Length: 416
Image (cartoon, rainbow, N blue to C red; front, side, top):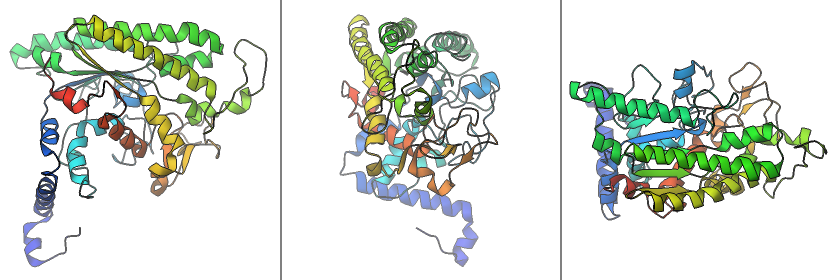
């Protein structure tokens, strides 16, 4: 819809006109959606639950940048923020869409493409380590790029054990400052009703492959250890009062351009501890890497069942991120993608456009034209584009891949 200029509109001014346009769109959307079960949307929209995340770079909204001074350079952030925002993407992450998606979903039901939730100034989830200009009114994000379930030299500075210690400090500090009217303002009851999300483990497996461990050792030693650490982390948050947990399966990292780029140097090399022949599946992903991811996910399914039985009053929801993300690759044309295994920003050209030492944001890398960014699933060979993240968020909210089939909207409003 285009607003034409007129003497009346000129007197009103552009700010007033934009406000009136938003009001008009919201009014139309409410009328149209009234017959389509509007109440669940409104209840989710007004949900005051806090969201606490313990994750890796797939959900890092600026933790590594704030905590370690790690700088991302253009073209990171170009799709939405117009500058690097601390997110490893050309724009928003799927967690950004989870925080604001329901009003957007209401609007797009009548095919008006506007992200009104964010344009109206709603907060994104703030990184815990950021010291300036943050708000924890919607929760805190402890996620950091490179995080693994174990603290090692190669797992980054902010592993899962570190994030747990940060969370305990944050909660204790909040309790001390709350009577003084200072700090985050989150009450003990709000901590109890918060959603605690865990999406970690992929970096552990990736490091095991980098260390050239055999498939047998990864499946028999590494994967069980990852699941045990995640279970221990959930129990610690439960002991601190948490009752609502969302555990995300790990994705098919054998479909990432960064992983696939190793194919040429490893295939058929023979010999050595981990020098096994690489095989690709029907869609072009590395079979061994994805088999390790699926092995971890199988253990996570048992883990969620055990936690639900062992933790009285807790709700544990699993999200099959493997199925969601693999589906993007396998059915890429249906989602509007034409280059499912190629990085938008990288070096080396097809088929993967990824070279170690020529990472996105460096002088050796080049990004695809901004107008073509939505045709790519992978942004930099490791992380997703905003276009892919948007679809991932929609799939999560649909609850189609949730176990049990409990929508996050319902979990948000559920009393523990």
